[in-house]
Image 1 (cartoon, rainbow, N blue to C red):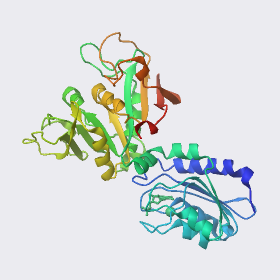
Image 2: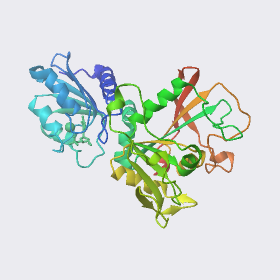
Image 3: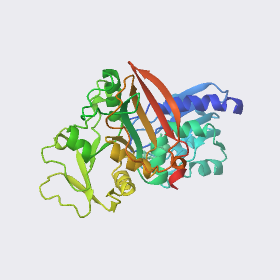
Image 4: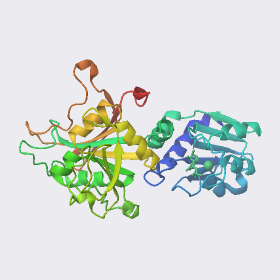
Length: 367
Ligand code: AOF
Ligand code: ZN
């Protein structure tokens, strides 16, 4: 039996389920699944929680049990057709007797793809593309990583209403409220890596650790990455403490003699490093999502290269009038080259506002 008019509503639920995996599934995608029985009633729900754990379909099918026979499965990502950390979901759906599978986004992972074709070949009705934009958004970090072979980048900054991140004398603590800073720690904790430039390390000596007060505190700490072309990070910098692993990204000819850190050598690009190569190297280390913090120079370089996929701005109701701008030169010499974004989300956080925006046409801009 078919219930196509219900497709969007059930897929919306699957997308909401997928979102529950945010911050814990890396290097795997977030995936949600809803299973209906043959009469169209919801019989099971599932989502992917961690790499190596059951896929969303398997969880939903287990809940549905015998009621799945002749039923419909809604999945935010094409069911896998491979045996990786777990068995193929295409097979699990067939074994459960599912008659129809509705998919939002095709799987770009060549190792796992092919589930839709396998199901069709076995006589299952397959509908692709339902709520593809929403399902793509919920899984945007992993889809960037899987499609482009590089980590997804969220650039975060905190600034005054006039876009400044430090006063004239360089002082910058605290522009935003404790509530906004707690929110930053939650976002940091959900990332696989936290990236900062050596300028920020020299100026602020940050720890770059995630210190959330909530339940995510138990997760493994994000990798700290310092973009440090000339290897200027002081050996006693806090970022090199033992609170989390740290990678120093340096130029291939940089002198790292006195540093005892993990070093990643990269080609130079302009006056800095090849950031595209950095993100490919991080992806190869299973870093799906990068949280880029500090400072304006490095953020400008990412923007210039078209490598900032999402912007999270914490804006305080305060004015400075002078002092360091939140963003340094970003390759915009004339108004035609302006980086246009669209707002995704505008939320009050304590006395501040959190704005989430993304480039109007990412990631096609870099393809
Ligand atoms: C998931 N969760 O719910 C679905 C996935 O490492 P494995 O063997 O668990 O396989 C991961 C791949 O399986 C993943 O990259 C994606 O292509 C596919 N589907 N993965 O982690 C899920 N449905
Ligand atoms: Zn699967």
